[in-house]
Amino acid sequence: MLPLLRRSRDEILFGILKSCAADKLSINELLRVQNLSYKLLKSSLEQLANSGLVVVEKENERTLVNTTQEGLDALAHYRRAAAMVKANHHASKHQTTVKF
Image 1 (cartoon, rainbow, N blue to C red):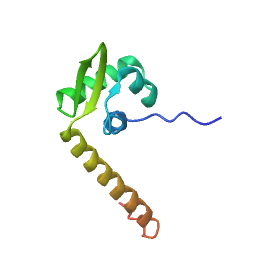
Image 2: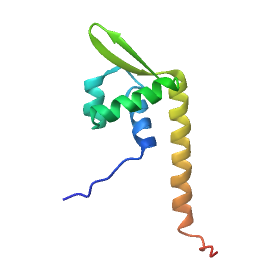
Image 3: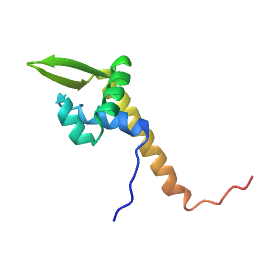
């Protein structure tokens, strides 16, 4: 059995941004794709919308979510930072340990 891996709040927020980057997604699609509870998705969308990173709109009885240009920019910065951390982690295997 695989251990449960919990995502940080930032990982959840950026997962939502990534999911809605290419096309608008409905609330049900986001719930399924991101594997979140409705309560957690709702609070996350409120935070992202209030920050201007997503737009939540009604279209033919459906609520759709789309990542804004500002959200795409934030996602690009997040990806670059994650890549730098990962690269530095791999490089650090060959470095000495600093003791304090």
